[in-house]
Image (cartoon, rainbow, N blue to C red; front, top):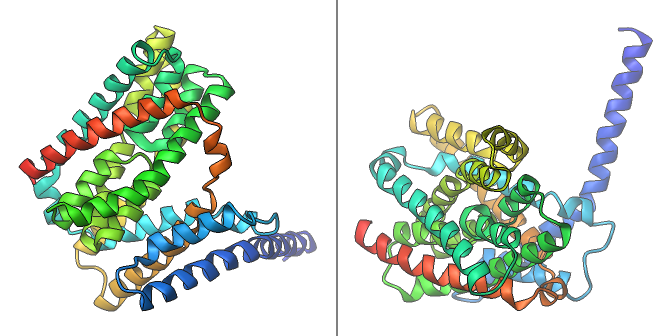
Length: 345
């Protein structure tokens, strides 16, 4: 090996070590808070460790704040969540999914379309919001939360102030639904599958949906994640529709679709691949157990990170109109979705 190659390898190693050193403190904070949540949940009956982790994270974020030295590691929470979802594929029974597939897909399509149309109708006519602000709210509430809002903002050339207000409103509802849906799941006569599909159809963002599902039960967590991923996959279609609406040309629709490609969850491919491998019987029981344990650990860390991203001061600066629109959408869609789930599943 040449001296140049040796130098390149050394530089790469040093860069990797440096990156790990930057991430370690924040990841350590996630581990500490997740461990504390697990410990408390183990001694206090009826307390869910995942939701407690979110609460601990939010408490830290809104009291002492997240220190600069921890931020790089805390920001890995999205990767941790996505990796946990990929590994969750090993716990999905494909035969059950296939049996419910056509009905579930149809329900997802109808829910997304109805949610978008409802928000578009009430945002401007009832609450007097600008067209583009209403479109951002429609995408965020109906498809995949902040990810859809940000992606659609680029497609329709929305201004930064409108985007910031909508993102804050969506985050507030993420926090509220994460607290309310598990309680509703305990009060309503729903099976794990029914609750998971209901949460996956109704709540806004992937992280809170997954957390609420697993707070109810393992079965609910799996169905909530699958349903939410199906909703997320609708982002490209919604982006094309908005590109055509605002640009008025099919060529712009293709450009808009490319612009939001990064917003479509790539981990969906990994999730499907892991589910296929597991259901073909290619993984041993020991391997499946290890994958399940790893997925649970990643979720515990990711949900703490979700809490650390909750900023009450930013939410207080959001106007009431976006909150009212999201409230109308959530109440209407969740009520109709609950009725459909009770009838169809």
